[in-house]
Image (tube, rainbow, N blue to C red; front, top):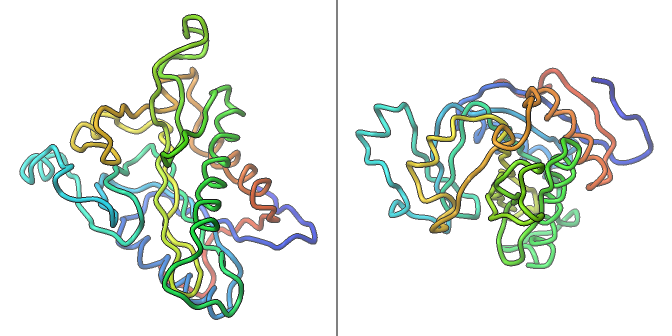
Length: 253
């Protein structure tokens, strides 16, 4: 994967592979501190997690369906996190992206980023995924008042009369810290084991059905292809020049 060399601001992109949730969370915190101090450029971490349910600030354990014994038998961790949003699932076959960006102006300090800026950032993340899915022939879209990315639940060729009920293919939950740096991000269902979604009320939304790229297209693109398209879309939407890195310099994993 070659770097995109322009005079735009650069962002380092690193593929981490399968990484435990707490390790990735701690890595985000260390990188965010360096970005806030001005010693590191923005970073986009791309990865997969082992099976885990995460509960955001708006969520609660009342949206857990499986009890602790069931989760342990299925090897699912449970983590309460500091991002926005409710409960979600991560697992192998799902592409997770953690953009670490200086969203606020340099020198900004505050308890909360202006709502318009925060919502605008979330909408940009959604657009990254909408464009990515369009590349693979999947007609994805945003929904007013809801966070994430949605698709018709049938394969495009099977949609009767062009209409179908909707499913959610990607979830988004982010945090902007007091120094204006983003953490957490998005999760796109490429080809995960979808049965694990049955253990929660996904995103705290009753009746929502989660779907994957594998439900909608054949053949399913390999993860590396999806990663490449996500990065290309991210560069367009956020106007970054991409520098691919095989490892994160100056930070021990």
